[in-house]
Amino acid sequence: MPARLARLCLLVGALSGGSAPAQEAGVRLSPVRGPDTAIPAEQAEAYLAGAQPMQAFLSQTAGEGPVPVPDSGPMQATRANPGRPVRAMIDEADLRPAAPSRRPAVQELPAPALAGTPYQASVTRLFPGPIYAPYRAVGLLVFTASDGRDYWCHAALIERAILLTAGHCVFQGGSGSDRGFNTTGYFYPGYSAAEVGSRRFGRCRVTLWATTEGWYRHGILNRGEDIGLALCDRVEGARWTYVNNWLPGERLGYLGFCYSGCRQGYQLLTQPFYEPGASGGGEMHLSRHLAIAGQPVPGAAGAVGRDLVFGSLSGPGGGGAPQLAATGLPEDGGQAVVVAVTSWALTGAEGGGIRGASALSGADGADFAALYNAMCRASRRVHGTASCRPLR
Image (tube, rainbow, N blue to C red):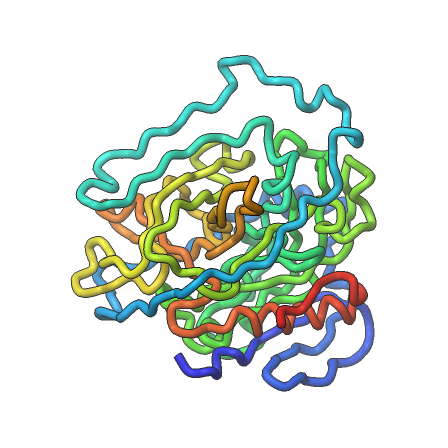
């Protein structure tokens, strides 16, 4: 894919006052919208409860044809930040073990969803919940899409105020118009349904959306372009009040992310996600699976996966969930970094357990570093130069 993918598409969603900002080279900005796009605090619960999971499917018969998968080369990644310790900040009663009957068990993969494929996975419920780093940097992204309906996806903090998600969670892919961006949205870090009415870590309002030029123009799944970013405002409504009025990543931490060489041939990955079919979608689960780059897409004759392909029990709404890979042993300085975001699922019974994730380094040369740097510049203008570090 030519370097035009470095051209980015951004939308200002709810920055206060003023006229449209000047256009930057390679960046598309919308006119600034006033604060009336924000949802009043008293409507937050209804907004969250009424959202439906955003879905993205790839037909098993609509393959794009065999595609060579480029070698990824050595992985380059940023460092994570665990945020502020929580043990001194909370009532230890919140961490008391649940009764044995409430402890999660490994869920067996439904047969024959993955029969005859190399894709296997196991899923457990995160216990005691996303209280600690790195999982509290992951949460639900709830938004009003361009069709006027409310949906939810996943998102993860990769800087103090920058969220990583899927492109289809921020923009109606392929429309090629700024009207395809979400109109408003909120991020709920470390979300737990047990916290209804009193969110542990509150929420932050999204003020800016971004996606790749490929997703903006083409909107094709299984091509490494389904990647999006969002910019958060300060946290509000947190029951643990030490988080309020801070950028979410300042207190909760953020994940490191890969920006080059993210597509390795085989990777053992962990995906934090919310499963509608378990716990009503209200609690975080962890899927551990083998992801394989460049494999034939099951059930799609002649189609080769340009993304990472893996088995998963995640259902509708899995889009945007971070795929975490370990870069080495902790004692050697290794860490879990985001290498991809969940993008699509196969339709039909044969592919019911197959998922794909867009790698941040892209399958066709998408330049995530340029996408991130554009969002970082916006973050530094709004939140100050300490809010993020540009990639060199």
